[in-house]
Amino acid sequence: MTSEVILPAGWPRPKGYSNGVVASGRMLFIAGMIGWDSQGQFHTDDFAAQARQALQNIADVLREAGGKPEHIVRMTWYVTDKREYMAAAREIGQAFREIIGSYNAAMTAVEVKALIEDRAKVEIEATAVLP
Figure (cartoon, rainbow, N blue to C red):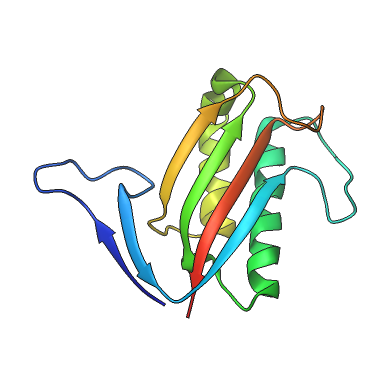
């Protein structure tokens, strides 16, 4: 995969994401992943722990397709409570660095009323471009 981070002239560099990414390769679209394990079981209602599990689920799908976390070019986070998300930011950042790394995906986070699974507090979808 080849990729290029896009940063318009004069814009400040975003912290933890990119405004845009140009990439070429084989595209992998990863469905929204939530904080349950591979058997569809939740082990916690803690926001940061659910985010960690969702990120791990993304990494597992990537690996199955022959990809790596650095191939992610876009992520969309859906959270049920932005205050809870912000309060867990440090733990989420640590989980992101441990599982995904410090890559420059274009990201969006949106607060939603609810997710389809009642216990889910966060859902993350991703797009990756594989070599």
